[in-house]
Amino acid sequence: MKKEKRYVLIIGAGDLVLPAYRIAREELDLGTIAFDYNPKAPAMEYADVALPVSTKDVTAAVKAARDLSRRYPLAGVFTAGADVEITVAALAESLSLPGIPVEVAQRCNDKLLMHRHLDSVGFVEKARYRVVRTAGEALDAARDVGLPCVLKPLDNCASRGVQRVEESSLVEDAYELAVSFNGTRGGEILVEECLEGSKHTVEMLAWNDRWHLLSIIDTHYISPRWPCETGLNTTTQTRSMQERMFRFSEQVARQIGVDFSAHKVDVNIGTDESIRMIELTARLSGGFHCQYASPLAFGSHDIRAALRLSVGDDLDPEDIRHRWERGAAVRAVFPKPGRIVSVAGVEEARRMPGVAEVFVWRGVGDTVGPYCNSADRPAFVIAGGETTREAVENAERARDRIRIETA
Image 1 (cartoon, rainbow, N blue to C red):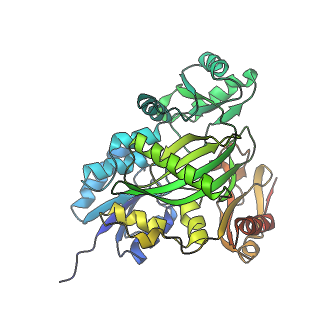
Image 2: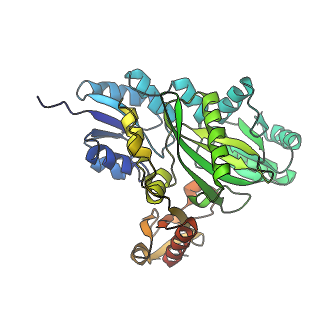
Image 3: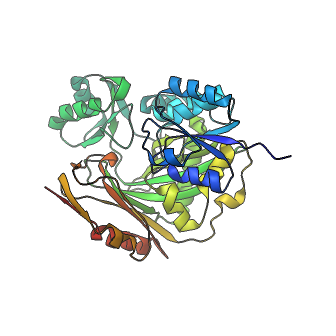
């Protein structure tokens, strides 16, 4: 008797989620159902079933999923690179599918809930913070935590509305910027101690009360003031530091309550080599990290591993095994701010040594800049190499061939 086809509901259908659809269909023989508010998102055409449902509208998503479950054998719900942990958790809970509790997902999505939960369990290896509701309170909080400090909205992602402030005269404007990106939270934002040092992402997978390290990357920013990533690459930290980062991140995940499937912890390494948490996200990474950089560098199949868990299958250790140790890098393209009048050099960049992918998300007529957060970036190059240094050089050479002219 032919086995009934199982379906996975994937939340989000953009470029960063698209690889999951291909892997689900071609490698795991799963049917795919897409939810995305944008009917023209890349994976909407690739999915077996596609519905224009907002990835942030939990009520609408649950209703649509329940209706679908009457027609399709839904085995799991999944995302990668999309900031929709709450929606994924709510769908899993509603349909009795594998996942983490909704309250845990909420901690990972709301910076204040995360801080307060970690406070309640005595975790102190993170930034000191104050929650404020007015510009005046923000100024008082900045003086309290000390300058420089960081102002953050509570309800957003990709560093939108985040700003590092070195002078008290800039606090009011930074507060207003954070509020403008604050979603449903109105005037309530965070003022955090500025963690000086290098920034890294530790990606892990938890299954049966055991944590597995998937990869560690170094991240780079356009300026101290603006957390707009210029790119990432396989880490250049020592093996001993990588082990410390992994064990630290496992501890953070346990404290927050994320004990199933893939998640990532962003950490800061200080000049004294101390490790402190920036945030934890209960999903696979964005920024082309799990989608392209890790497979290039290690030959691993992290998305496939997480997809298996999402539909109730056991972890296959072969999925997360590092078959080789090479380098990978992502570099963003930053044209002069303005209106794009021409784009050239893309195909030339694609043909350059080591280049795996090139993505251009803006075209003629679009406006680019200023570059204040990671959502402002218009184009990217992903490249590999025998070493991290070679991968970075390959990515940067190809990046420089892409010419986006503005007026």
